[in-house]
Image (tube, rainbow, N blue to C red; front, side, top):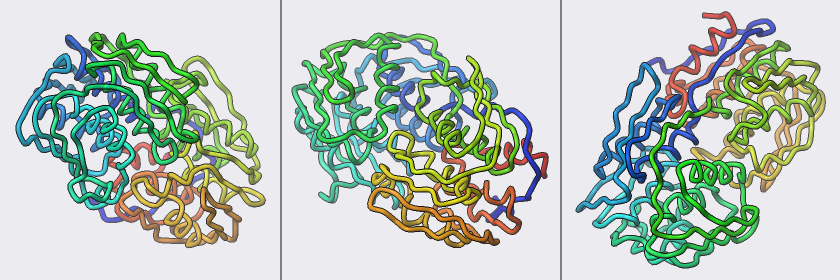
Length: 426
């Protein structure tokens, strides 16, 4: 593997692309299909490190999963929520979705489970999820009593009841609880404490649950009531292209003054990150929607003020675009980004300054004032989104080098090849 990639500047980009399947949808569908009765076929699935660790962990609890990489298809023989084991180890790498979802799932089984990951995962908070599962009757704790993985589960099924879950750190806590809840022994009531970040991801979760046959009551992402002793029903399920990954190609159109169409997504996609296009429209881009595509045409860019709490995975992409705008861009609503694969406020600010910007960090975001762009060697902090988003700067500015480009394997192993193809560069 190469240790760095220098991005080749290009002219206005014109083309279309279909990014790989959504990580968020693939990992949610895998959890639900694994719990379902019968065999589900997931088409358009993502092949990446995050999905591989999910598949490996599910196989460790006896779920049979056949993977046809050429067809991007996963065939999952669900275990109906019945699984047991002594001292089952799950290695999660740095996959936040896998850690949060599998932690909740493990409480449904019988036996002892340990979930661990790389050094950065051991720094990522999970205490609020642990406390919520305890409120539902689970025997669960963190190994070091520090509210971070490794997680230890001594499972005897999940009794159910009422739990409060903090909304300000990660919506994945709530999604994990929701997907496990139909298999609790009794009714589960989940109440969100405070404002919930990344609400579109929770709506995505409840929609997939319903697609697989679960029922629940919900009150605008604040309160959920899920009857216990339900069963998901296996089914064929088509996975949309990844909207977070699509943001890099829409961003490339904005930066280069080109026109890029992303196939397979629409304004009504399950993934909230299609809302990134509205942010680009506020900056001056032209956005066209069809039932099966979204096209962004780059125009003269202006800085904006925007709350990105619902599309926080695209903050780094918008930050890259902001370097080419007239005037500052103020991003708020994303305090939880400090707890992602890296500190996506502090570390992002550091790299933007290398590129010539003035950046003021805020408690929940940043203000980016463009300066004179300059060459830079970009640290990626083993964060796939840092690598993919800041590569866009190199489409216009010579001398932008991305270090550790292989970190994109977490969600998009072939990103740099796809970027080169659509740019017409080698």
